[in-house]
Amino acid sequence: MTDEEIIALYFARNEDAIAATQRKYDGYCRSLIGRLLSNPRDVEETVSDLWLKAWMSIPPNRPERLGLYLARIGRNLACNRLRENSAARRGDGADALLDELSEVLGGVSTEEVVDAKELQRAVNGFLRRLPERECSIFVRRCFWAESAAEIARRYRMRENTVTVTLHRTRKKLREYLIKEGYL
Image (cartoon, rainbow, N blue to C red; front, side, top):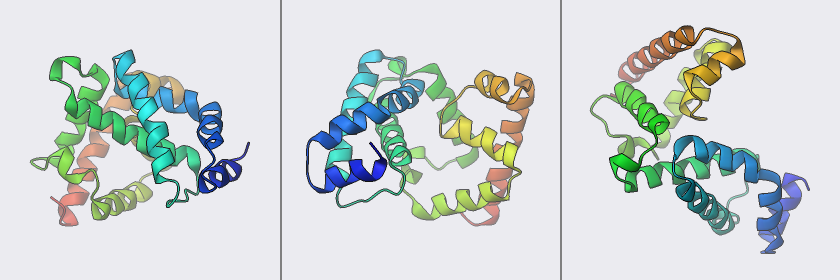
């Protein structure tokens, strides 16, 4: 079933939309959420919350790319669950990722900027200026929560090279955000 057909089911308020969405995107969404949450129960609950959130938000929203729309909702739900959980229950990968992003944002809390559309536009502008590989590495780490080792395997690079590239990209992003007046 195509994304357009699935979205039409949502707009018709046909409950088959959820089943069709699960058939097509369950593995994709579960993988993304699983990278952020270490507890299998948290993953399961977050994936269930994702289907409900999709049902509640389509309509009025009509996503152009359903997979990316679901990924964004799933990532946000996983981040919310991380904040709700104690530090002891957080996944190591997610802790490291949040630490890396807080390095860029300085004193600004992650919670304060999650929904900031202007900041989102600024970061997107920054990413468009990066060389393709550097941009891909940064997005795979920050959006898809892939580890440096996974990225290194994907691009046939040394893990240290990926780590250094990410560090330099975060530094460039911080400088760009300061120059643009966001920090």
